Image 1 (cartoon, rainbow, N blue to C red):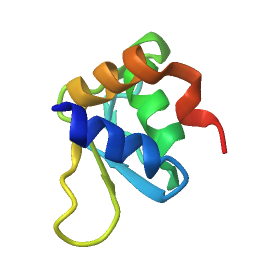
Image 2 (cartoon, one colour):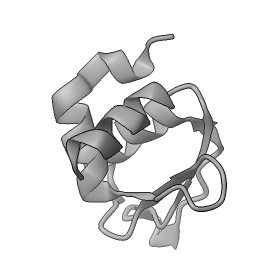
Image 3 (tube, helix red, strand yellow):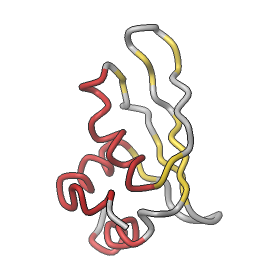
Image 4 (cartoon, rainbow, N blue to C red):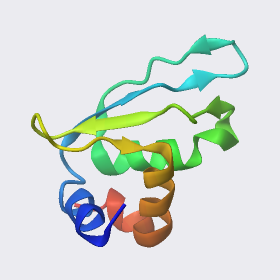
Length: 89
């Protein structure tokens, strides 16, 4: 992710987001994750492996059509850079 895309994601942290492609390792099923704010979605994907999820195929969708999705690696980078600022108002 480039700096411009990261700044755009930070600015959009209060938009509704969907998380797809998360696998629940304990139950061997695709996890159904409820919609949440973008900042919360980034936080979840960045830290989900600790909770027993495989997020290698995870994608966070937000914004209007044409807005790039955020992959798991992008979530990790965003969380490392901005941390709890993603959860603020």
